[in-house]
Length: 280
Ligand SMILES: [Zn+2]
Ligand SMILES: [Zn+2]
Image (cartoon, rainbow, N blue to C red; front, side, top):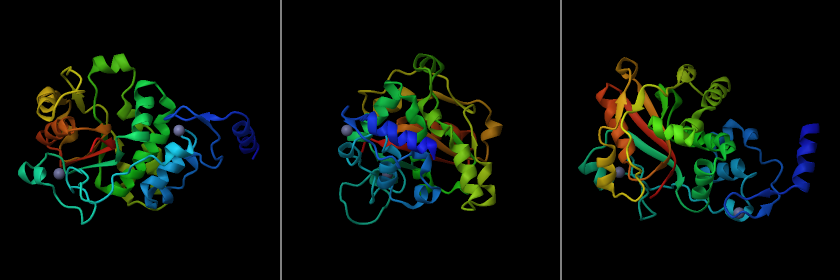
């Protein structure tokens, strides 16, 4: 009670600075990411979860400038169709060349507010966003996947030199609190018995080649750039496992596709991909 009163006092005296537009604003005091019930994370529309989780970080105008990935979209690569009517189905590209992953799902479109937030997290070292963004990603996971259908959650790995430069793997930070969230789902009785067996696995898939940045490259160049860049460290750990790969942004899918190919070649039973954002 005292902490809450102090927080209310602090919020009324010291406004927060919006991550997207840099304006100062007074957040609504009840918008604390950790207060969001699991039930809401699982069942509320993702834009509502976004508003609740990001309330302390974004002003009212910016928080509504978020575009979720809404249906219809491709059931495999997850790309939203231009036409906004009809049901989800496989797109022409996925029919022509079947990807190695089972499906890709993303929380939102990489523009406006979401782009600003991811930039702040990744390039301006706003590491405090890892928890809220990780919860948002978990909310998307509950909507698109079944806990009992996944054995390992793995971040898309960075090459060791990039890891040293940046100091952290943003994809790992997003899932760092997932074991607690998965346990909470399990304790709430919303998961199957196997739910707590999901493990965070950061060691099995490694990036053996230092690739140049994918920024500015076209789809084919990106695919060429990451070709054979990954390796499974211990195939026996991957064999038969159902893997969820996570990352911050999905662009052309070249990296996710190459990771899925490498994992599948080592005997992975399935590879799903989940990202915070996608470019289209
Ligand atoms: Zn703003
Ligand atoms: Zn597709």
